[in-house]
Image (cartoon, rainbow, N blue to C red):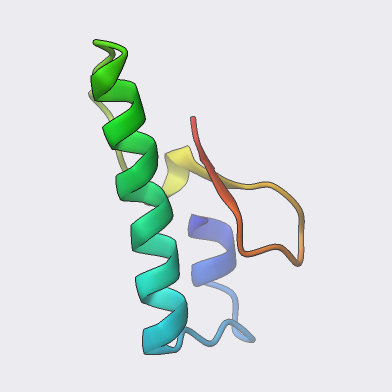
Length: 59
């Protein structure tokens, strides 16, 4: 996520931001339900599933 965000051609609309944050919150919620904590949550640890995708994975 970090590399995409710092790119010159990256445009983040409010709608996209809500979509991204929702996916991140859903991922953290799932991990917490599995009794897993992510102790280093930052943009560098949020991975895009494909180069032009808006789906993310917590790493």
